[in-house]
Amino acid sequence: MKLTWGWKIGILYVVFAGGIVAMVIASNKQDVDLVSDDYYKDEIAYQKVLDASKNEAHLAGSVAVHANADKIFIDFPGEFANKAISGNVHLYSPVSSKWDKTVAINVSDDRMDIPRGGLKPSIYSVKVSYEVAGKDYYYETQIDLSKS
Image 1: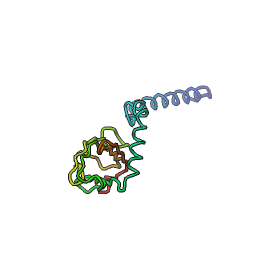
Image 2: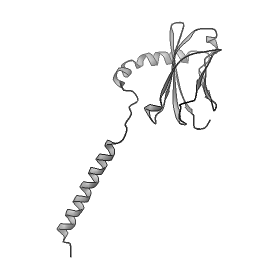
Image 3: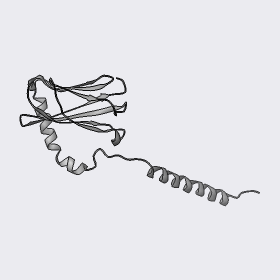
Image 4: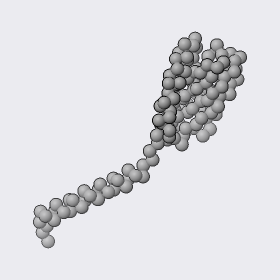
């Protein structure tokens, strides 16, 4: 049986349409995570983050973040020694929102320890929002937990 050019075009069209349908089905199965579920509200409140970042920049020292195999350590500036520090640390994973973790700040000797249990070996953005004596501070850095 010999196929004419009309049949060949028809077969090509069916294969193309089937490919498009397959791509649509595959793209609908993809998990798409936004950085924030309420990004509009967060964008409006971002001026507070900018102000807190300026306050952090004016400090003599800065927050330091490092990790070992068991814990993540967050060292606060020495000028806050013996002062009450409150706030939270948000570990943001660009891979999946299921990997994110938020921890309330609990400082002893100007240092906070976060156990690495439950954290995946990935790169995290560490966002430290804290308050000391009624003044807000914000520090952000990245940490690679796949290497330690």
